[in-house]
Length: 288
Image (tube, rainbow, N blue to C red):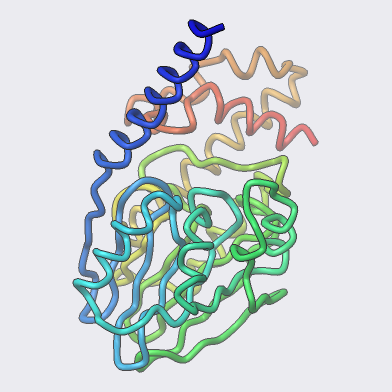
């Protein structure tokens, strides 16, 4: 019994050390986009930050254990409080720090469905919930400009939002855009292939060649990167639809590396979504 307790204690201690080491390894990198808009990279979804006389406006919160580092990075940009936190969707790598940020008397904003999904998540408590929700779109005026927040139907999830800074010409796409890599289309959370593609197209109305785009994941981007990403998805969609029309099974599509070879060679399968996973996702999403 003592041996079992010792092993358990050692295992728990090992987990704590590993978690701390991972936390210490994560660096929050700040990118200045304009005089008052910044992008923060860390672990999880990219964070957007607007600073000015009205306070700090923050987009997404990454994981809770990174909050101290994120706050430290924000304090180098502004000594004012975080007035608002907007979530682009409900996934934990974008909302995991909500509870910590809310304790700073910050108002959280998100789509109606984000509220529902965070509410139903046993790993998150009510402190993580948005206080202000919207169905279609929302307009906010802060730090000298209008921020347009608009919902995208059944794209990455069923609660996606993009945010456009009208004066700064900066777009935060959330996870409806993964720069230089295959996207995660969460079919189990209301996401869809066609909705994802439509979401990308809808933002093209707002942006121009000078727009700076903060992707959900990946490097700071521009309209050319965005258009390349759209072409990739449309190309793969067409190929997979042809396979489905020819009676191919999910296994046959998932293992057919020729379908994605062009983009595999560009390392689009580098990260969370592998080449096989995107082929399988496209099959399941289009087969429905």
